[in-house]
Length: 179
Image 1 (cartoon, rainbow, N blue to C red):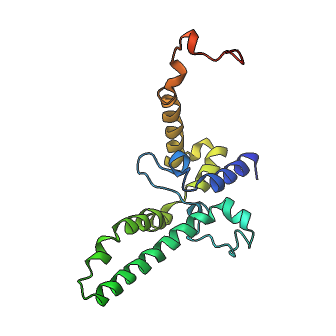
Image 2: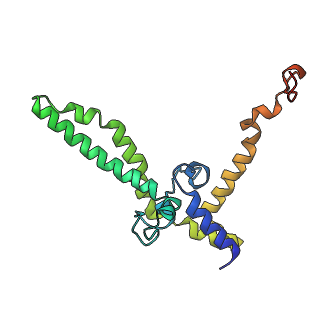
Image 3: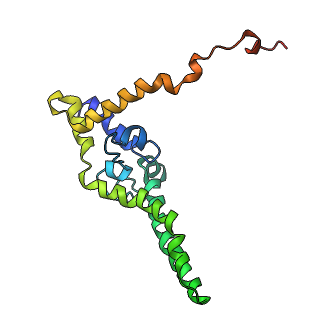
């Protein structure tokens, strides 16, 4: 195992979480989000599973909280709708609230759970990226996409930092402790 493959393995494991998926794990052209579980080639990351082995800190580092929140969001949607049906029945109303107010929760579940699980079937890029780091002939669309993301980020850096080009008058600049 080379240094590059070790680096890329750690990078994939630690940076394909929810918050950073749009920075590194998100495919620029197809917006295919790579979840922590997907980057480890699993659909779930359980605290007692083979990856974390009961270690809470390691489980958090691997992205276990992501799957925890996503699964509990699905359970919340089911529980919320059942409760709304129960209330509607008790006051003899049609159960429109259960359907109408489940929208935001359904969006949450589809974005954070269903969509990434669908992506897991063809998320095979980390192993390709490791190989491409060692062999330029094994370059893939995924690694080209990483380069595209990095290039766009570098190109936009000047526009993202407008305060770097501001010119302040001398009287508004800080002068140490003098008043």
